Amino acid sequence: MSESRRVPERAGGAPAERIYHLTTPGEWAAATAEGAYRFSTRDRTLEEVGFVHCGHREQVLEVAERLYADSAELVLLVIDPGRLGSRVREENLEGGTELYPHVYGPLDLAAVTEAIPIRRESSGPFRLPADL
Image (cartoon, rainbow, N blue to C red; front, top):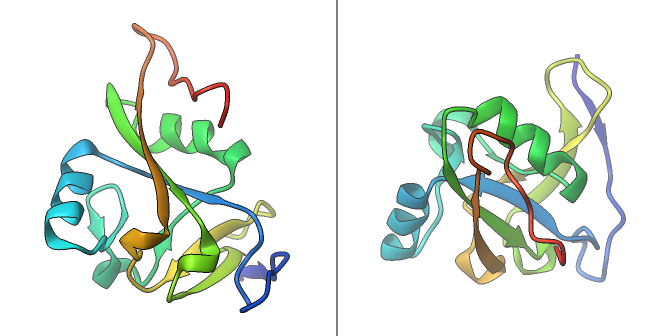
């Protein structure tokens, strides 16, 4: 059974905090060339899954290690939910208690405030910028 909760909102009904999405350099390049981001998670599209998987800052590294353990480089998209044209829901669809933001529609490129390349330390974990 899925669990869902509402996140703190700003005027307009969007969550107040930034959310994040991990992608590959190739998927991000394709999105910027097409003018729309339509990937859900690694190698799966929005059309296949129904939403874009996102996370909160404290969830990013765990997701990177779990889903991209064999990758050396990723792109971390910093998203302003107030600029999204699609609905954001906080939920856990796998029965756990930790909630993740899901964007139910294409990710508007105008909502991406930063696209930060992140690299794995040599044979170690991914590192996020200190000022993130």
